Amino acid sequence: MSTPVKSSAAPAHGLSAAQGIWLVAEREIGSKLRSKAFVISTAILILGALAAVIWGGFAASNSSGTPVAVTPDASQYVSEAQGLDVTDASDRAAAEQLVESGDVDAAIVGDTSSPTGFTILADSEAPTQLMLQLAQLPPVELLSPDEVDGALGYVAALGFGIVFLFAASMFGGTIAQSVVEEKQTRVVELLISAIPVRSLLAGKVIGNTILAMGQILLLAAVAVVGLTVTDQTALLQGLGAPIAWFAVFFLFGFILLASLFAAAAAMVSRQEDIGSTTTPLTLLIMAPYFLVIFFNDNPLVLGVMSYVPFSAPVGMPMRIFLGQAQWWEPLLSLVILIATCVGAILVGARIYENSLLRMGGRVKLSEALAR
Image 1 (cartoon, rainbow, N blue to C red):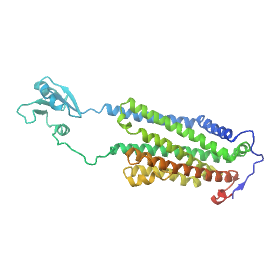
Image 2 (tube, one colour):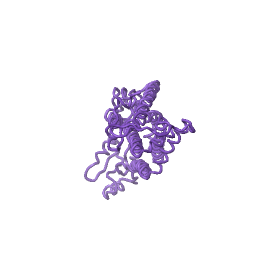
Image 3 (tube, rainbow, N blue to C red):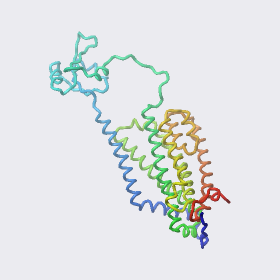
Image 4 (spheres, rainbow, N blue to C red):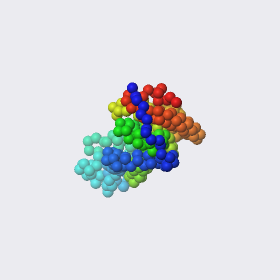
């Protein structure tokens, strides 16, 4: 059974609420930046993102096509062909020599007796890919073309989902551990003797929000610069507005989750018991990730996700990227998210305030919400 502990001193009146909040936020930021684990994990993330971008650019730039030799009288037939690694040959004899030596897979030479105007020379078998690339295909007109490439849509869904899952779970867990650690060591009693309980909660949320947003923006900058430098600008086309909206939605979504993580952690007094109160929140974080991965091409699921506060930071940017959202929908979804965020802060503050000084067993939710 939890036992309430009363602080021996009243909160100091020398600090304003804003000063108290900022002092706690600075403490949270400073402790994380001095933590070797946090710095190392951030460095690994940045290096991993940079390596992935560089590897993608390297693979794209070194993706050679079918090696072929082409004589001058056949060059006009392959001028618009894609996926060929062309080697110029002065005449048919030179082209045959390149094929026999293995320098090229095939040769394309002019042939006036051929209906196509050229002939393919190969050693034992003509490359199938080359035959397909040179095939005469009729023009195709799409009546209902897809606005976004399916593969690119999946990449966007994966990116939004992973960033939200990683940042929310990592910093949410950090807040929970910090709250319980302060309860275990009785440091919290000293803190609230100088700072009101709600200022302590606000400082923790703001400090970790700054860290989370800073880390995400740093990763985004690395990815954008890397993709630009390695000429992978196709991946960035159409991502400007969705990324901006993702940042806005993530800001309020993280504040909502951070408040609830702090409140949930305040209900227990031991590190081993954190999972008993934070598991529902962890499931709320994981749900948008799996939903957007498996249903990134389902308009109905994405539409519902974009208005549910816990999944809106992932669902709405995806709908914007896919061109499914009207101009007013992000604004309406953001209003719903902010309203939910305010409500969560008020509820979280009450739970935090009623549970923070209770030591021993887990505090019941009804007791934590009592006035």
